[in-house]
Image (cartoon, rainbow, N blue to C red):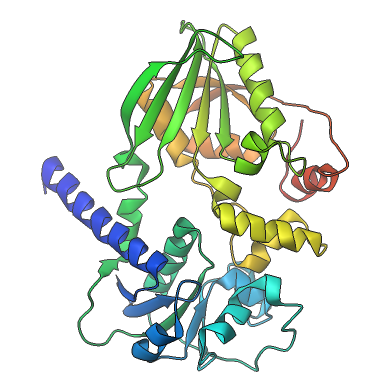
Length: 359
């Protein structure tokens, strides 16, 4: 297959996956095909009992992380959890929501007993979990073996094509004076099938030296509303001023709210923190990985900006490792130290102690 035909094939696959994600959000059934099995799925969070009755299955598919929380996996599996299917677990949407949503655990402490069953397609089940996270919904589905025709369908490979950073391209750019620097340019990046646009802010005059670069994941509560529960807003503004003091810099603003789980799920994690869980355990109880962001997007943005060597401003060694795997040469890691407050002390301690952040 030549490059043009390959691009067309990936584009067609990405469009199929985008339609399936749209069906997922709207509470419509969809089908995912994998090399080891095909599944029909209905997202628990967006489903209605009328749709469930028509779907005709009481089996519920949950993520491996959520299954570990519910103590449905043994220790070996819990080390690398995969999706778990619960046979006949819920005959109404409300019952399934109680299984899927950890905010309801205190109200519904006695769940089960559950009988687990083969997923019927490991690749399809894993792709469905990725789609739920991408849609910002709880990773839980009513599931059945594929039956009859499907109005909306995609393959596990189509989901990978939808999220392929190689499909990202520069969509627009313009001069944008900002408080930190009057000589700044904003560059917008877009994938054809995606709704979220990522942006870069280039500060100062490009020269032959590697720029100061900051990867900043979108945080509505911190960046816009001034939340004291995190340090995102202060980090953003400190990074911009540091770039203004350097010869030049690049802020990569990634639309990956809540470490990649979406705004609504981030707020659910906040509610769990109010129950005493730290940020890591809150994400796991919701059924998500501790880190769900895709730093390959940042590598692609730097490639499109023709920036192969950087000075990375971060306290997170994982960002260094992930960018280096994308072919970005990091000549220096610049720490970013900011004062704490009584609302974010525990959050910052968790980042230090459980996710390896360091100054």
